[in-house]
Image (cartoon, rainbow, N blue to C red; front, top):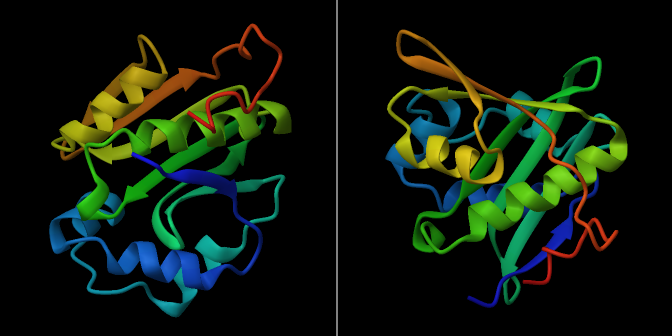
Length: 167
C-alpha cells in the first residue's frame, strides 16, 4: 500500500465528497448510522469545517485519489469524538489504522486527552480498529449503539508525533 497522509484544511469539500462517494450503502450506514444516499448540505458544511484546533482531520491519498478520512471533533474539556471513513475499495488494507494514529497524534498536540467513538454495536471493523489503536478501551453498549472510550496514548518514544504517517 502506497497511501500518503496529510492534514486537511477548512473547506476541502472535494476530498470529503470523493471519500463519501466511494462508500457503499452499507459503509455509509455503518459510518453515519443511517442509510443516507448522500450527505446533506448541512452535514457537508459541518464535516468540512476543519479548524486545526477543535476539529482535526487527516486524509489518505493513493496518487491523487482520496481514499479515507479520520477526524476528531471536540466534545468537551480535552475530549474529542473520533470518526473514520475509508472507501470500500481500500478497506482492510491498514489505511484506517494509519489515519486514526495520525489524527490522534494531532489531537494529542491539540490537548485532547480522551477519545470517544459512538459506533453501531455490530460495526465489528470499527470496534477492532479502535481496540488496535487504544488498548483496553472502555465499551458501553446501549441497544444498537456502543460508545468506545479511551485515553490518548503517550507520544512515541522518538519524540516525533508524525512518525507513523509515512509508514
